[in-house]
Length: 311
Ligand SMILES: Nc1ncnc2c1ncn2[C@@H]1O[C@H](COP(=O)(O)OP(=O)(O)O)[C@@H](O)[C@H]1O
Ligand SMILES: O=P(O)(O)OC[C@H]1O[C@](O)(COP(=O)(O)O)[C@@H](O)[C@@H]1O
Image 1 (tube, rainbow, N blue to C red):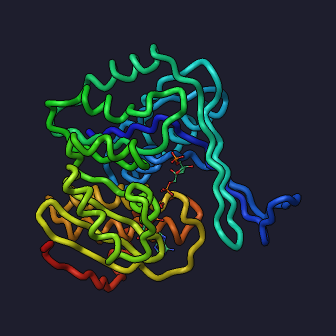
Image 2: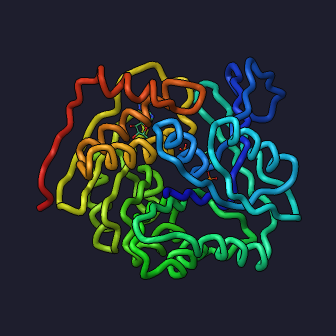
């Protein structure tokens, strides 16, 4: 079974605004609401790709109820813990000349709620996959992902982590199977700015030295680079197409990568290709990535993947 853990799921309120301005009243040209949060998005895409997942995390209030409802519509089985104080966040995504996001904090989570989460994680068994993804609400300890992996220590799980700064680096000692920082997140860890796939490679290698097995660095419209546990480096430009909304491109990439890996019995090049297609399929559409779009891109793209061995 594949479990996704999104400690603070969201409703993504995606609006388009002609020439968005700060300090002014802006009027929208379109408005859409989607369920979101990194693990939730991974679950939605994997579900469409034919992989059953259980989406876990904390939800609260009317927004939490709507997240659950929309996930049910998307065919995703939720195993969320309902918390009493506050509400699940609404993240504002503004599509304009550039994309702007305002991400909220989420509800207040108590020690008892954390205990409930651990009691549900008890059921993970050898061979399961767990995806720990996204920001965590301020009421949770900043080493929450470490605590989860410490709790699960000893089980042979495929662990995927998509998080920022110490929330990510703290998990590396547990040797996650995959981490997927984007270029900004990778740069933030080391206090540098990363402008290209070439520049990303030495820093991705450092994360491998710190414990990550496979490191996939995404660079939006500049593609991605993958360092595998087998010592290979795959690098590719992004697919070409008309960009509509990139919110969820990274999450779709993770889902596509995992599905590609599982479908091909562990071929990292196939996983990389499907990750690129899933990310692009999201960027080229307003709504969440579907199997149909990923398959179309997989069939019609002539990939130009550079492959070399790590020195
Ligand atoms: N503008 C784009 N054109 C084509 N593919 C894109 C575009 N933006 C994102 N992607 C694809 O999705 C992947 C993940 O996107 P990215 O924006 O880097 O992730 P995140 O959402 O985590 O910041 C990229 O590596 C790329 O393959
Ligand atoms: O948990 P965070 O880091 O605040 O991110 C949450 C946001 O990221 C998303 O999961 C999209 O993530 P990506 O664009 O990185 O794929 C949104 O659905 C959500 O609003």
